[in-house]
Amino acid sequence: MAVVTGASSGIGEATTRRLAALGMTVVAVARREQRLTALATELPNVVAHVADVTDTDQVDALADRVRREFGACHVLVNNAGVGGGPFRGRDDLDDALRTLDVNTAGPIRCMAAFASLLEESAPSRVVNIGSVAGKLGIGPAGYAASKFALVGFSEAVGLSWASRGVTVCQLNPGFIDTEGFPQSQVKRTPARRIVGRPEDVARAVHEVIRSGRTERTVPSFYRALVVLRHVATPVYRAIASRIPRASGSRD
Figure (cartoon, rainbow, N blue to C red):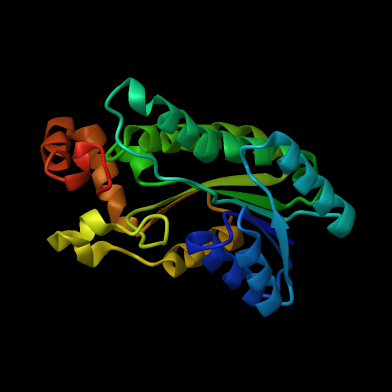
């Protein structure tokens, strides 16, 4: 039995479809009721649940429903997220804080609400959809900060929850073309060939659920940049400064 947030489009929808195809019952969570209803109508083992991950009461109600109706939660995929815009000063404060609330506090709320049920359902998995931006700090500052925080939270909680039978994975995609993240900026450059699809991430989610890995990068070649950032920082910064998103935007 799985719960997937941000399931109305993109990575969340692709993950919901993949897990449902494997025969799992999936509670698909998002704010857009019409899209969730269409997904649940198409896939009989998908259950639609409308909730906003920035609302603690709604997240608690989601966990209560899953416990009441299914009695278990074997997989929690925290995927709901927003991109945010550039951070230039005071006018951008609300946008940055909103991005942190959705991308970082949202998964924390969900993990808090499902903690006891995940432990009771052990062995179980939490898959937090982070980003390569949570390792490299390129792009909108609020977004990068939210993903850096999610990576750190996942790693720390993963160490403490392992003894409870709950594996926590930070899954970090690179450039993935979705409705919310169309990657228009990247597609205008020769790097457009590295833009992936939501299904690529959904396959990786399936793999870490099966294997119990605690970290995964999609595609894996992005890890070379992460290593470069730590072992040859000046070289990395010279390369990063030429990437269009070094401007702090996604335009």
